[in-house]
Image (cartoon, rainbow, N blue to C red; front, side, top):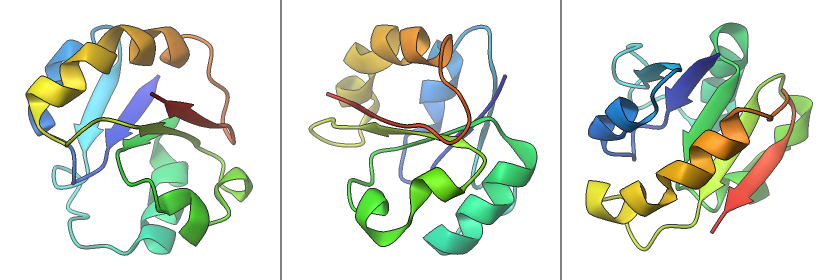
Length: 105
């Protein structure tokens, strides 16, 4: 399963997502791409998009994209605040389907 981490996430989170092929938005050369265009790019190459952008679900009709979206409700986007969510993220990744939007808090 191919996972894309939003540019607002600490890239070191990728190391904790063991068993998945993880890339970041900047690694793909997509830094600065607006959300709608980013979702189009993501659905073409990835199965899951992970973000902490809580507004994304209000700005975009996420179920229309052929990529699952995980929105993490962390205190901040710092690695220390994201790591407690890793077990839940891994659990969700094992069952998520494209087009689903899942909020992890």
